[in-house]
Image (cartoon, rainbow, N blue to C red; front, side, top):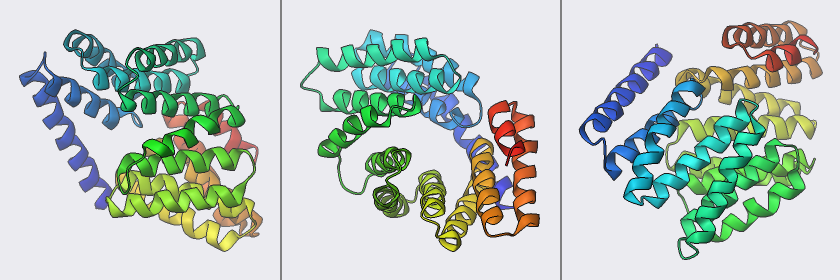
Length: 274
């Protein structure tokens, strides 16, 4: 079973990172391992992700490990915003900005601030304000690396939310190509889902189904429970538009059930009112 193998591999990676933290509790290697743990838990356990971030901050600060500190603040902006704590998210965005402004020669800190600010405003629904931060980061982008693929993905998402679906599709495809080159399954799953959305809104339903189903297969392999909910909802939408109501109902019910299990009432309510 591919999903079980993926879960086992993820568990082994977590165990390995935890061992590194034990061996390196007060150096940059330990900080980087803690941030690796944040990345592993970001999609499946927000409380654990937050706990590891707060473990990383004082060590990174004491070592003047600026990239570790910047990454920690970036994660906290996302974690607090995803859990509905906008004031705390705004606070850590301010910390990111101050860190970048205090170290103007370090372009990575500026890039992290731009990324976080772009996503912060995007998640608030202010896509016009978000887009310049994301587009500015293109000048820092290196070819064929995962971070650049993520940037294309986020720019595509901003264009999508401005109803510019063709530009969204362009950037999502650019991101997908790089995620495939670097063999990032998680990144591929994000881009594939987003392409499903793009083609749905361009009324190209067969292409939309194709990309949603590809995203679903990868998210199942990754055991990305929260990500599966959004893709099931997208699949429900496109099958409904194609008058394939039994399949539409199947995916909506999967989304509702999983939302209840994860205690995500927003996603559950959206599925109920399709």
